Length: 189
Image (cartoon, rainbow, N blue to C red):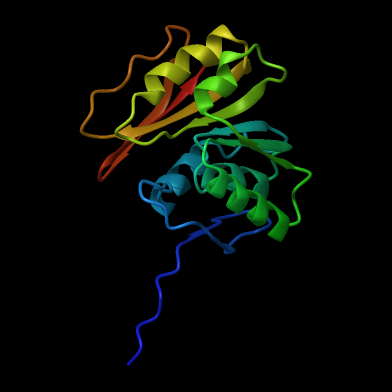
């Protein structure tokens, strides 16, 4: 009996694309937020997504930004340094006929944030590779260069075995949780 090739995909949990599965690349280190974690996060954000401008930094599969668009966000910017991953994100936006609502930027997150902001975001998702030091580099750049709208919410996902990264003093913990290998926190700025 021939064995079927493994298909990697993400599932949109709610909103206009509820239940849609979208392909993702089989790339080492690409780790989408689990359905369980995303469900909890978006329960927290229930009243904050509609009309929001979202930044999915370290986008990878784009699951967080796509979930926002499905739930009525005005705009989502997806930043990833990998050209193949960015191409797949663009294809998924095209499949969902939402290329006008989503912008894919092929650039490292730190380079993207290192310049003064040309727009501000209401919701920011920081979910870098767990073994990197990118989180500690990205958080201050969001503040220093004006990327956050007044009262923005910032979601941070990191390995549960690591100590929480030092967040800017202006950020107040709003909600937090743990699931398996992952610690996730939502901050109000």
